Image (cartoon, rainbow, N blue to C red; front, side):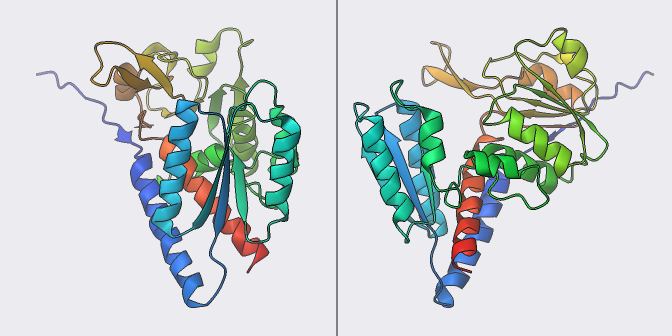
Amino acid sequence: MTQVLQNTYTLIDGRKISTDIKGEISAKVAERKKLGKKIPHLAIILVGDDGASQTYVDHKVKACKEVGYHYTMMRFADTISEEKLMKHIDHVNKDEDVDGFIVQLPLPPHISVERITEKIRSDKDVDGFTNHNFGSIISKSPLIMPATPFGIMELLRRYSIVTEGKNCVIVGASRLVGAPLSMMLVEQGHATVTICNKYTQGLSAITRLADILIVAVGKPGLISADMVKEGAVVIDVGTTRVEGPQFKNGYALKGDVDFKEVAPKTSFITPVPGGVGPMTIASLLLNTLRATENRNP
């Protein structure tokens, strides 16, 4: 009788890990309170009324409440001038009660993301977007890590996934995820990293070599089973809202990986939603705590 071996994979549960991290942060905040130390304070700037941005900001505010942080929410119309927005950022930079702050992206087309990002004081830049923090990734003492890559590294660490000496392939070279993550995997993870972008030729031949495959493009179903090595670890960062009458709410969130097809080939895989997404907010909270501790030990 032939025995059929079925590959079992481990689902990387970002929601659970994120809840664990929030529990750890809550305990530290309670301890700071008991000792009369400063409670972390996060300020959030939201420009315009983009639905997705509003949802992300609501999640961040909810997370602040859960861990006991103070928070300030600033909303501006999408007609605000870049100069005026800069003045508000200056004000938050100088406010000694604010430990960390973020400007929710995207911004309206008439406002330069780079100029706005660089205006944020680097010791308060809890998104880890400023050139100062970004460049520190390759130093021996990195400063504030970009939230999503930091969250991915934390998932790998907490699931005891070994990166040292492993072939890691990152599909997507963005400044928000792919580029910083590649540096973190080399510097902290001691991995061998290949980073693919839209100009990469023969993508599937490269992805098939990956022990750890990380995809952050925003193209639903880009990665099919024939592009993944047996037993690989797959981290899906893509989150795209796909609309259609077949979905209960009229839409569904889809990742860059064809989960149903790919999962049985993997050893570990993140779902969408519930994988990397919750970790971005957990990392933002960790960065805010770190910024607070740096400024008020």
